[in-house]
Image (tube, rainbow, N blue to C red; front, side, top):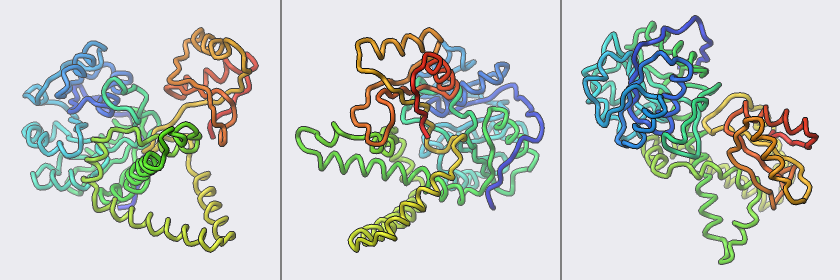
Length: 378
């Protein structure tokens, strides 16, 4: 099955009740997105973390919270498995009695083949439609979830031939109503693709960080001068270690294929450097640049978007405070702000990061209105 991008083809039927199993970053973002766009939906959540449930209830995100799956989850139109990948099989057994024509089971895991195999073995395939929102964050937990995490993000849909097409169409329309862009592909194609563009990059980022950690001196010289390029390529190494341990094991076969392919590519590059083959080295970087520059920049991928700008700033007392005051006076929340001491690959001495694209655009207007020179992230 080739991947198919699915534009919206009609309004979505809005369900009365939805169940979310696992209220971490993705489950929390799903709940917050549904509450923001469809406030009339009753949202039930199950999580082992009582604090997450209490916070979600306090913020008015969920209607009810449970520490285990109960009969209350019956009659949900959609049940979303948002727990860690390797824990889903246990939840499948608990949810099985509720499935049927009135209930579609889905998930949000980044590995699809294994859960499809589990679902098939339990005879639940006719009511299971796999889902994977291609969005995330280096943070984890419900408190880090935002109601705009899925905005314009690809949402991959996987299913087998036993699912009625009308159910797939209904599910696709609901996903689209959340601001996502649905794409249909086979579980196998999904797992190989995400291994290449998501799972392998996380392994490589962590390998690079650990290499620098091991090679650094006692004064941490490398850590002190780490430039924007190093921080950009390794940012995702701050993601949940437990989650990536599970993903590596769950998508083991595809990831090993990609690691072997990467080692071969790296070895070839090493030989070109050894030979000082300047034309081949130039071609290597040119092809990478051309392909990277051709990537769509307006849509979220498996690596979360960064909403940041760089600003020229005169070295004077109160400079940062003035900018912070301008942004605060206009209701713009800052996620992070700091001086760049190594600007090898960056323009602007002050880096400001925001939570979403709307805050970034608002900040650009206000700072330029006050005649600051701003550089946007390419």
